[in-house]
Length: 229
Length: 229
DNA sequence: CCAAAAGTGTTTGTAATACACCCATGG
DNA sequence: CCATGGGTGTATTACAAACACTTTTGG
Image (cartoon, rainbow over all chains, first blue to last red; front, side, top):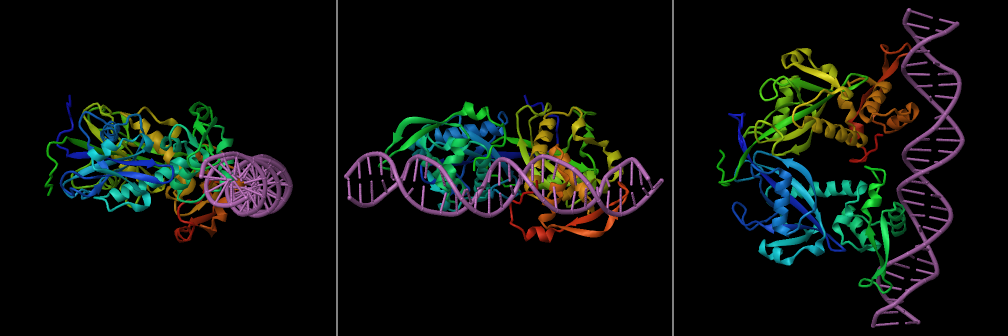
């Protein structure tokens, strides 16, 4: 299969690492694992793995995410390729980082136990191995960029969500409080949400109406470059 | 040196490809080469090369750009990692693409001849090998994003430039005409240009004043996120 | 009846856009 | 004196930001 004509060039180990974001209704979190092998065994790390000859880095990232979460069809995007010669203390490894947005409610605790994984609020991240902190920092920035012009926030929410939940999410992503009235107006004016005749009654006496995101309506919009915030 | 503990994982050829942008005062161009080896020998291609075990992809990109242009300290930024299994017809090669902005006037024609390189206006790009057209397309988008919030345009101009030249550049980057008065006002209000007492007299009878970009003034600005256009 | 969160409009300031004429010069 | 491109100001519009009270309901 690999009838490689490029003799005499170095071959390098290629890995992918996944920054997995989740939102619990109040706080934005990242899923980290206790690394199970040397070097740095037992230390907190992003979920990662090596890329095989028969798969693209995208495919490897999907595979690795599935191992940790059991989830498919997850929103995921390439972040950056990290390639410093000594980024990995055990050898020359280039890592392509991906960030993923998942609905934390769908995440099964079983898998969490299997992999010694834990959700950490973004402001309480422990020390991470190698250059994983830099990866996470870059992922936060990219998520902010992305969320300000594309409807990625909905990937982090359950199908039905309330406006206060949505606002909490955007506040968590941007790390700043937003004005309730301005937020509501702007998001509703986009015309991409459908209001349901049903209320969420857990978090308040009055109850907040549920909404669903309408992908169709969004795709009929000014493709590429709507302002979300 | 490579005391690699990760046995039994695939090692893969890693390349970098460079999208090199240049501006001649009127048109935005990309530097392409006639590929000198098989496969696809003789076809138009981005300048590229393989990453060795002893260098990062950044370092490889700098090295490759130097080979083609003889220039150092060039503005360059990682674009994306392209990793489809069959993107290269001759074997499994992952490519990390970089885009570079150079002052076309400093570019020596000698090197152009040596490498069978040519500048192509962005709207007259010939067919390229592999996924290089996709790389170039993505680079154009990224340059637009970047140029709308960071002072990268100056990388493409000579040290002394006129406001009409600067406007031409932004029009070329964004592929749209801009209003002269609005453009001038906005760019001067940023306070990052110094006007010289000297005029460029080639392109008009009246002559246009030269300006220089003042990096210091910019760095005293609202770090990250000034609107340029 | 009260505590707690949901819902709802208006005003003000700021930035983006549209637009047209005079100036300086070389030939 | 005229053709060419350089330089300049204002009025309008749209968007962002600030801001406070009423509604609902479970306890």
